[in-house]
Length: 289
Image 1 (cartoon, rainbow, N blue to C red):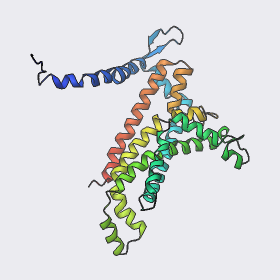
Image 2: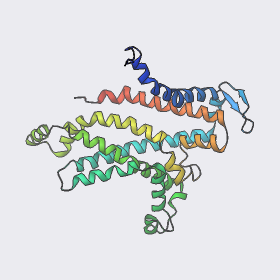
Image 3: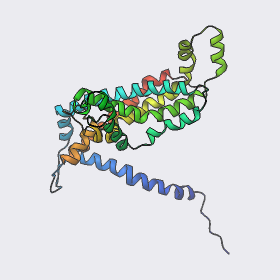
Image 4: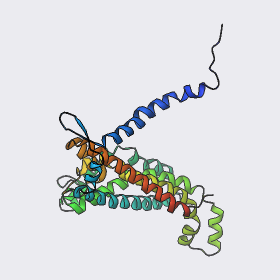
């Protein structure tokens, strides 16, 4: 029986073909179409397109509502990243100790991350419900989610809790690479726990911290939509209306297709710019083994 074979120079392309198709259909084509639509105004009913050039971008940066969302997003991201990394690092340090049953605690930590943002939002909505929520009951049935300042704090808390397990898993893995003999030597030399942490432990955690800094920034800007949609829908008085939710409102509610496409490009370039800035500044302080 004659056996058919692929030529060596053809086989790699055949194996990569499914990946190329997926990238073209779900990444490159949507990106190109988004850029194209950002240069047009689209009629909400007929779908007729009219070339507008940079009008949508000009309109974005002269819109007080969008600029408000821009500032809210910055504060939200800053809080989620700093609190998320701080709490996850502290919890990881505690879990790194030799305590009975610790492996079970570690398994439970990933559960919040496994939940969808909508489910996590529903849990927090129940906790802070003024009628039958646990926290609502013990705080005098206060309407936490209808007050601007407290609603903003709750979505920060929910976003931090949702991503906590993800951060802890990476920190626990990184802590295993911290040499115990170096910690013991520093202890013998009289270094206290705080000095040992900043001089030795944190140096070995810096690559993981930098990676999580980038990932948590992306998470805060792009992946918090489900939480906000379930908890506040951008309210009250747009106090939780971050950029990704403003984008959703303009496209699906207000039917401003070209305007929303321009918003998505601005959001993408913003996150890319922040990431590049992090690489240019923070990475220089990272200690690689």
